[in-house]
Length: 61
Image (cartoon, rainbow, N blue to C red; front, side, top):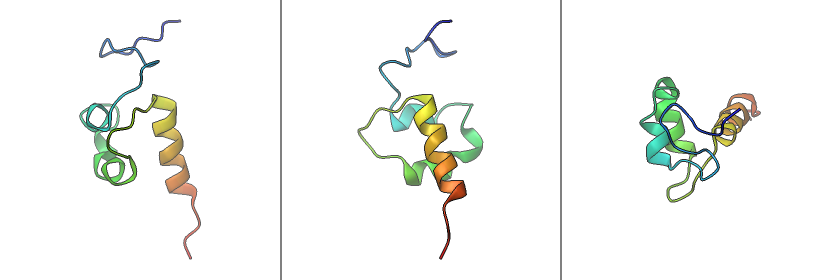
């Protein structure tokens, strides 16, 4: 199995916040990801999904 994605980028290097927000895969959660991802940091797809999972399952006080 390859570490290349459909965009042709290697996931080993990670994706910027801008790359993730412009992707089709996360287009329905663009606003949420824009708020929870940090600028200047690289993320793997699994890290983005973990951040989403953490947000959706957190306790609200």
